[in-house]
Length: 188
Image 1 (tube, rainbow, N blue to C red):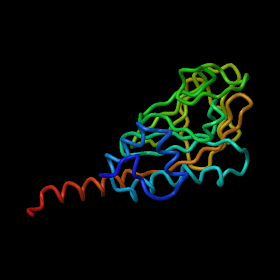
Image 2: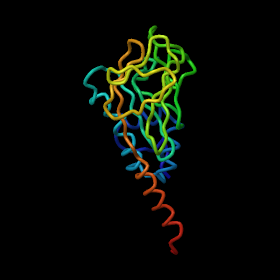
Image 3: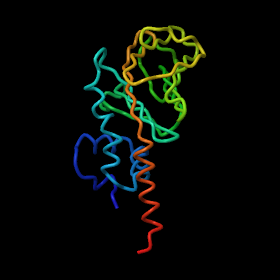
Image 4: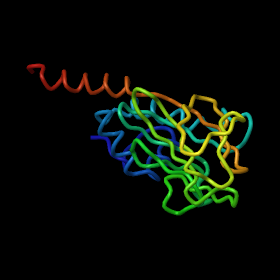
């Protein structure tokens, strides 16, 4: 059985998985311990910084069927250049310590915005009545209104600009789960 202690391959991938143990456990379990499946899901996260064109900061949103996770280089801990949220369908963003993604910038409110994921709607941004506002591609998001997000969007929280990248992997997981289910029901 594949565990975090015996993952072969890419050092950067291994470091990311070890720094995010709950995400790693979830992905390994959902991918039936198939490292190729886990790599397919994590690869866009590891390559997100190379996609940045407008700023050095990014959020990579990853959907996994009915849930997902966010990964970012906005970590307040300098030693962690890339960190991920827990698997969920809603994440708060702001200056506060309890936010899923904490942004240590004075123009960002303690609880500035929330990103949600719905399999039918995709990723959506909601400004929580922040003092200095939220923008998507230069257009202000009205407080308490929902704004759909797309791959490549430029987000602005107060004065902080962040590029958003989106990847969807529900098909990867459902195909892998189908294969596991088929193997379990095949007489052998």
